[in-house]
Amino acid sequence: MERLAARLDDEYFRLDNPGREDMRQAALQTFSKARAASALTFALSSDDSQLHEAIYEAVIAMDDPSTVIQSLETALGPGD
Image (cartoon, rainbow, N blue to C red; front, side):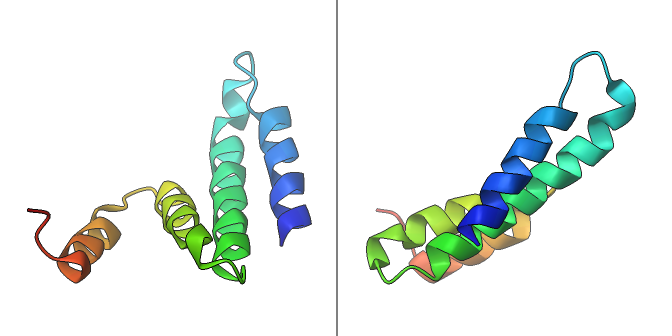
């Protein structure tokens, strides 16, 4: 998964060229795939301290993360 995330990151940087607006959608899709692969890498880690990174990467991979954020807020309870 780690190599896949790195490969997708490289592809994203190649596609994300300010002079190539026609490639913008492909770049964004590749970015989301890279973040999702990275999220899986962190989630599958034996190091529990990496779980917050998995959540962050998963949220960043989404176009509209509001549903996931609401679920997390509900699960974590009040912040006071």
